[in-house]
Length: 122
Image 1 (cartoon, rainbow, N blue to C red):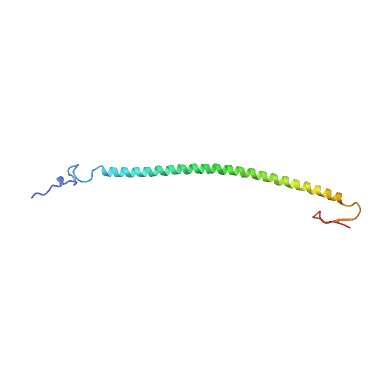
Image 2: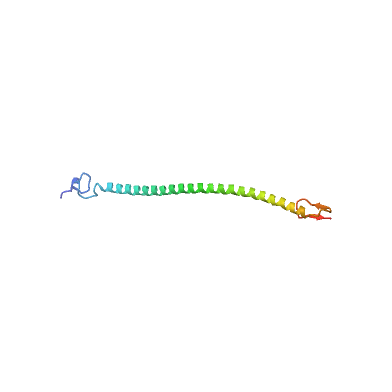
């Protein structure tokens, strides 16, 4: 009986190419497939990051607009407060004038500071 020669065994080192064993291109296909999957994942992450950056830029623009509107409201509120104080003083003095005209010309009056409603006649 003759022993098979190592060179004639399919898939053995030094054996004939094309006979038995995995083809030589299989490791290349597997690595190519892995590379393509990794590249697809990278592309997906890049797309997600682009969307996120766009959202951040939009958010920044909206916050800037909101800040401008808040500043305008603050300025308007300050102006309103000032106008309201002036109007209050104007009508307070007007009320004082009216009350002074209502006072009798004779008699003694006593004024208690702090409230015009506390004027007493004697």
